[in-house]
Image 1 (cartoon, rainbow, N blue to C red):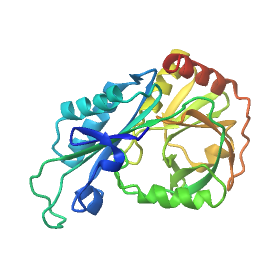
Image 2 (image 1 turned 90 degrees about the horizontal axis):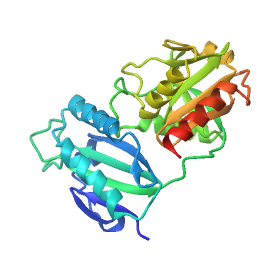
Image 3 (image 1 turned 30 degrees about the vertical axis):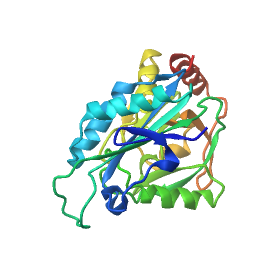
Image 4 (image 1 turned 90 degrees about the vertical axis):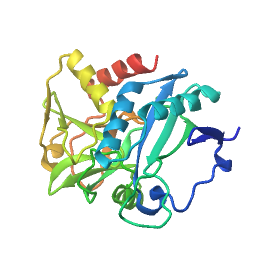
Length: 274
């Protein structure tokens, strides 16, 4: 079956959708996006994803009705025959008549597609530690992801699935995920800042950690903390909770049978995928 997509509210096969080369998304990456998972035909934390999209739109000064976005995302799911997967939804500032860094008032441009995906039973990841070379507003979910793309493809050359980024030794996040780690039976994650995206799954996992009353700290951590970590995890909409099995350029003490990880993974699966 052809992949379903939406362009400014019109649902069609993705092969039939045409986007102008004068789109500011194409010319400047002047656009933001969300990835929203669904399971058994129901979106997971839909309102929280919309709030984050609203934040991204506000911070980039893109004027777009969040109600329109919501309706188009729901329409994609309703018109598909998929039970489990995700919707990618992107909003650009619009289409220019002439390429210019300065933007005028224009109608926002909305594009999305729906994808089948299996969220459970993903294999542990091999990762590489890299410098964080991205722009300084990673709390905005911008489509300007060249820094992530370059670093993740460098890691792919080392047979890695993901990266862990740091700025001058201070941990930020993964290439497409947030980071948690365990040390001395305590769970840690870098605190939110302009350098870190407020992940929806990150929030979900923190709720579970607090419900279980585990020792937990959000703070500022560096690469040396990972050397002493007994377990390292990534969280994201498409990863859920997934553990790191190896950091190729850092010696660690990772324990593949971390009890805190097992409990959090089971609680997460029970809460969102049962």
